[in-house]
Every structure is written in structure tokens, then in C-alpha cells.
Length: 364
Image (cartoon, rainbow, N blue to C red; front, side, top):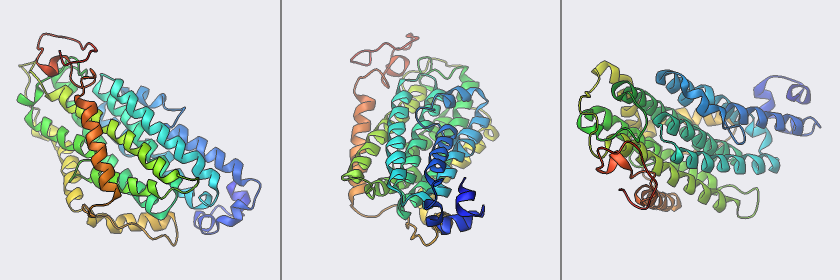
């Protein structure tokens, strides 16, 4: 349909002359089908259900397909056609609310899971929602932020998937209600998990912190409706606070509290090496994120000819994004330690004989 509207299937020509497509009566039906395709491929509401169910594969496969490549195909599709449809307000009015709602719902569902891999699966849904919303904003800065967060997400989520596979292999379970205290027998695994989880939670100096702050700045640029920018940014803060909470739950659920399986041991170093490389990159590229600027600049200008890409740095001074990050950390910490039964439960709180969590107002 877009090829008929534009008179060509050359993507460079289509993106460089969006007015040709938008002048056609086929433009809106094509946009609706693009959004439908991207929503089903990248698990946006109401099509989120398939992604957690697809996590039955081995964790290295999950790391490759569900963190780095396959589920990003819908995101890529939206990125490619964003320059064509951003001039139409309807594009932003659909993608930004759709993505942010998916981000919040996915994060809430992640907090409700007990299986470490299921937590990561729902987390992927949530992170894809943030990317969808950022693409919907459509500014060059927001698209740059989406490019960086796509990269950051691939690093920290692939790391976590591989480490959850190690936990499952060594402990025979991924259920946080049956795990606890693994840091004492698997310290390297615990350290790597902590680094990746901190990046997912958006804590400095990890790359996830930089990408989350740039997303905040990008959301503030939303202008498709009165007050759209602040509302989008606040919603992203809510999703990110929930992300902080389930990141804490992953780490504390597996490694905190009293050890319940004393016969475990650290796996061979070669088994940990792939996760260690990805975790180390998440830290190194957070500290030196400037080295990624040529890559993100090229990606952004390829997506949006004539765009002015963002320049990324770990520290931009005291600004709105930093304030929003501090609010995120405070709210996330409150959620993860507030006695909700989500993070402080059973074997993670000094109850070594308790096999399951019970909801309640305190850790006991």
C-alpha cells in the first residue's frame, strides 16, 4: 500500500518524501496496519500474552531472540516509518498512549510473577512499551533515545536471561519462593546479576541509566496534545519505578536472605563468560557512553534524514531528567521495601524453612 501511494518501494525515497505518502488515501490504512503489525510482533497491548508464553525456550535462546533481536522487529518497523507518519498527529496519539500503557501493565505483571524468567518476560513487554512510546513522540531526540535504549536493553536483558539460566541449572528452580541466599555460594553470578539488574533499573553509572534519562527527556518533547509531554514523562516514571522494584525482586529473591540450598556452587568460568562480557559492557558503556555517539548518530540520521541526533553523556548536570530519576529511585525503593509481599518474602527474609510466600504487611 505504501509502495502504491509513494510510487516506489525504495525506503530512502519514501522516508525522504513523506508528503507523497500522506497525500494518498492509502496512508491512514497503511499506518493502521503498520501499528497492528508492530504491536503483535513487539507484544504491545492487547497482544502481550504471547511473549511470556514463548519463554519456554532455553535461556540462551531467550537472550538472543527475546532480548536482542526477534521482539525488536516491530520496534524497528515503527522506527523506519516514523519519519513518514510523525507529521500526522494520529500516529503519536496512538503510539504514545499504547506504549506507555503497555509499559505500566507489563511492569505490574512482572511484579506479580514468581518465576525469574517470567519476570524478565513481562519486563521485556514493559521495555518494548517504552520504546514504542518514544518512537511515537517522533522528535529526533526521542528517536535517538529509542535507539540507545534498544541497545541498552539488549545488553542488560540478555545478561539477565543467561544468568537466570545458570540459576535454574545450579539450583533446579527459578521460583523466588524457593530460592534465597545464593550470593554466599554463587558470588560471581550474584555480582553479574546485580550489575545487569541495576542497569535495567536505570541506576548510574550503567548504560540503562543514560538511556532511561534520555527517554525521559524525549517524552517531555511530546506535543501532540496539551500537556502530553509532562503526562508522558510522569507515566514513564511510574513504569520505571515499577522496573526498579522488580529488578530489586530479582536480585533479592535469588541472592538475598538465608541460604536454603547449601550444596550449590559457582558454575565454571566459561559458563559465566558470555553474561560477564555483556554485564561488563553495560558498565563500561555507561561510563563511556560517548563512544556510542557515532553509532547512534548514524542510526538516527538513517531513520530521520536531516535530524539532529542527541549527544549522550553520563552526566548532563542537574536537569529535569535527573529529578525524574531521583523520583524513580525513591518510588522504586519504597515499592521494593514497603512490605507488600512482592520483594520481602519467605526465604529471602530469614525464614529458611518456609517454602512459599504469603502476602501480608511484613516480611514474616
